[in-house]
Amino acid sequence: MEHDVRGAGAVTKRDAAGIFAAVVFAGFLFAPLRHYVGDLSDVEQAKKEKDSFPFSTYPMFTAYRHGCQSIPHVVGFTSDGSRVHLDYRHFGSGGLNQVRRQISRAMRRGQATRVAQRYADALRRRARSREKDVIEVAVVRSRFIFDEYFGHGADGATNLPFRERVHATCVVGGQAVGFDPPIRWKSRGLSTRQE
Image 1 (cartoon, rainbow, N blue to C red):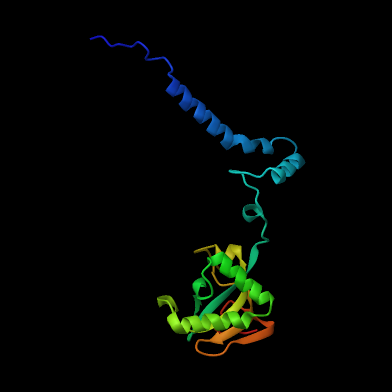
Image 2: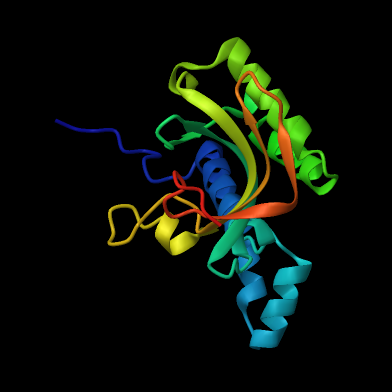
């Protein structure tokens, strides 16, 4: 039985185009590596001047966060003092980060009572299933320690903030009360809410 092998080893135009495309793609993918060659100070400067995928030095990904972060947000409390994370859509519809920035701006402008009142009124009108037991909301700036917050299952791991400053509170169905200066809560055991 004979096989026709004429042209079996020849590279066709289609094969060449595929190889060329793969080489060009690999070149684009590995091009940022050129910024990581040379003296360390030159490398640091080049990274700042030419930041790109896949080796991004954008601060969102690479900034040193000193092991903790302060985050403005609104938290709900049940009658037994349990914390409930409230849906951001009670305040706005622009997305989580946009609403968080709006809350932060309101806190800086001394309008935390407005934020607390809006959340409490929204909860009274249409609380989601996990928010039905919330009786009070607090507008807070929480400080989280990364190692503890992200250390799921580890000894001492907790998703509670290390410290909080309360800018305003509002009982659901009541009037908001603001605090200037903000009240400081030691958040490990917030149900007692002690200074």
